[in-house]
Length: 369
Ligand code: FAD
Ligand code: UDP
Image 1 (cartoon, rainbow, N blue to C red):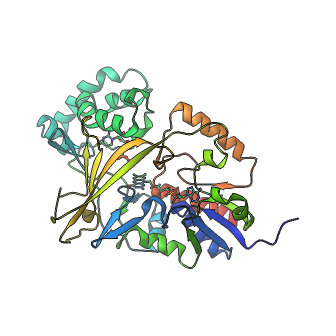
Image 2: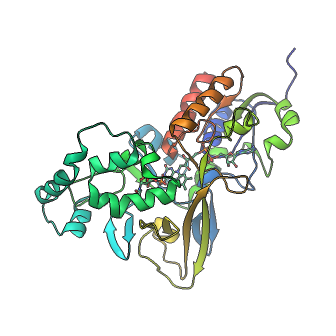
Image 3: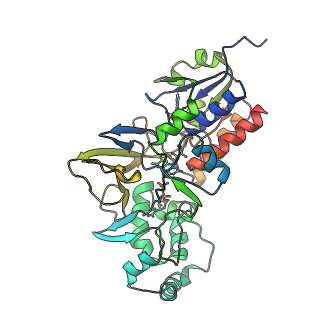
């Protein structure tokens, strides 16, 4: 017999998946409790305001989407600014524009027209175009050729993933645009920006009026917490949910070193990638530029990639064959349960924010209608 429980939904994880699901369920008059083991809401989008600057505590988050519905949805909680991501790459002291576009080709080869750039890329990719790429290195060589691969991809990718580019799936770099126009916009999407006043405005809007408890790890009080609600939405690690019974899924982590600098402008851009193998970090962020800040001081973050462990948080699922198969086995196991698994960790998927929002809205619609 079902107990008379206090909540309809216990939502584990106050990241975007949990927050969107909780918001939609509350709209349908469901009683929700959201918990998170961190001491704040917002998951990886969380920002800490330091010296008037919203510091992206878990790495640069730039919102972009082609979906007008999702853009209007997020803008209904907080207006977004016109920030356009246009990172630079620093390779051994030389600066290149990203993504790969006419500015990059001019800086690399001094070419001035698309035909000249195409001629070089065609020459460098020709010999690699014969077979279907089976890994990231082959994919890169067949898309952009040797010069770009060696200066702008190989070092960055191998640092970021801690694996040889030949051992990584090709899809990871398919998301990077290649353009024959002088256009440094990193994304092809129609809509892009940063919430005015920071991402916490979005989280607070979504979770407004919903009971949230932070600093609570589900696994430390699993039975009692589960007993509080009729349904459970879980957005943590799926392998942890099953006590790692089939083995551990691998994740890549990052160590963020935040620094306050007593100067107003350090690098003139929000994101600079360091693509050479001998520099231990992959990027330096300068947070004020996400919101066009003119504060007296500036805050930067160096991102050092490393393997996830008990100490280092899981950020990036490693969707190689071994891990993908292990995830499939956990997913099969989860189909026997009534738990709703969602988000980057529970679905073991390299999702962006707009995709997470789309997935949470779809799931809420299905379950709540
Ligand atoms: P999360 O935000 O990770 O939230 C999950 C929450 O669950 C966490 O707060 C965690 O503490 C909590 N939790 C886990 N286990 C437990 C437990 N046992 N008990 C209680 N709580 C638990 N996307 C973009 O669109 N643009 C970008 O520029 C971008 N940049 C990124 C940069 C980095 C470095 C990273 C890591 C991701 C980036 N993303 C970006 C992706 C974006 O962060 C995700 O798509 C989104 O935040 C995922 O939301 P989520 O709710 O699935 O997960
Ligand atoms: N990448 C690269 N050089 C760069 C930037 C990205 O080789 O200067 C590759 C790298 O493999 C990375 C992938 O492209 O993991 C996707 O890059 P993106 O900027 O989308 O990564 P994220 O913001 O998700 O960390």
